Structure formats: structure tokens, C-alpha cells
Amino acid sequence: GIEGFGYGLVVLRRVEHRAPWWRFDQAPQSLAGRPAEGLRAGFEAADWLLANGDDESLLAARLAVHEGARLETVQRARGGDWVTERAMLRHVAGIPFSGAIDDKTAEFVAACDGTRSLYEAIELVAAGRAVPPGFLGVVRGLIGNGFLVPLPPGGQVNSW
Image (cartoon, rainbow, N blue to C red):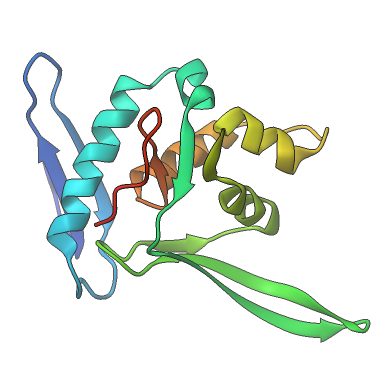
């Protein structure tokens, strides 16, 4: 039933004892670097998300920012200070995914240093304010695209 296909990535995975899964993404402008390792890491992230799919497991997980993640900002001077005009989270390792990010989400990503649970990182950044609805979906996307890496209990981040 596919009627068309543009420049993108389609990933299919058949796994034992579980339903197969698939995903599709718009392909980044360049796949230079080590995209095969990024695909492998994407399989691992998807498997982890399937195994830890409930909110309780996700909130208990310790996450760390992947060493290939970069925050790029464009700022302008206003009122005697620098104000962020736009910010982009970019991956410079594996598959170079990127996307716009707001200041609070960028602050949250930085708080994921592997020393605290996701719940603790959210509490640190939220500081008593309400967390936006759907935020755990954003976190799942950050894991799925390799910006945040789940740590095994007592473990360290795997690098690509």
C-alpha cells in the first residue's frame, strides 16, 4: 500500500518472542560518519523502550546525554542581555538527527547526567512547576533518536 517514498530511513526489525517493529524518519542531510553504529544504537534504544514502556519504568531509569549530542543556539542582544532566538539539538555521531528544542527541555537534557533517575531530573528542572502534558513522549523521542542513553544499573553510557 505504499504510494510514494522520499529521501528517508525506514527501519524494520523482526525479533523473537515479540511483535516486530518498524519506524521511519526523514533522513538527515548527510549520513557521513558512522551511520551503521547509529542504526545499531537505534535498535538497542527501541528494544529498551519496548522493555521499559510503562511510565513507572521510564521514570525510574537513569539517563545520560550521549557524547555526540550538541546544543546549538542563535542568540541576539536585547535589553542588556542575550536572548535565545532559536536552539537546535543536534547529533554529531551515528545518524545525525537534529531538531528544535526549547530552553526548558534543553535544561532537562543537561540534567540527565546519569547520577539521578528521570523522575529526579524532571523534579530538578520543574522546580515545583507543572510538567507539560506529553513530556514523557518527548523523553521517549530523545532516547529513540540517541540523544539520551539509558544506563544499566550501576553502569556507564555506551558510546558509538
